[in-house]
Image 1 (spheres, rainbow, N blue to C red):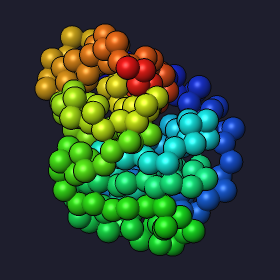
Image 2: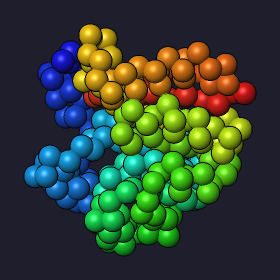
Image 3: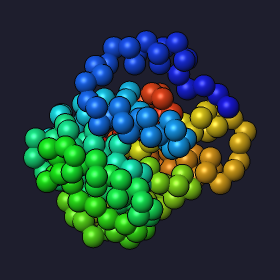
Length: 208
């Protein structure tokens, strides 16, 4: 495993962020207790900035977990909708409770099921967020590409995958992430970069 960010740098960056939302703190506590992976505050702040710049009408998440990333998207949106999709009903139930406990409930839509199937029900997607099983990333962008709006953003978490993409690891997930990254950089319909923040965040703009 290759550290993506020096822990001292990550600690410093986190120290700069305001701790002003009790619902975020509660979700972070649950994630720690259950060992549940979330994007955490640094990536949450980053995607919030992208939302403020992009001003999307429709955000679709493939793999929402219990709603942490969706909450970051929704709280940065002026209007529009964020669609949460997860295969685990208990995750979606928890996410629904979080949104209902905030002022953001009208902005959220919840689905239980296969993200690649449910996601294709939507069109003119302004931001597509991918955080499903890593070996599915390449299939996800292939399935969802026709459903993206002009100049849409694709945001994918874990695209440095604990540094394994730069090592000799050849497990299914690592190979899936490598193939996805290569495709996104080679596809002339996208302009892509990877931000070495936390576990690596790929951001692509659809230009074709």
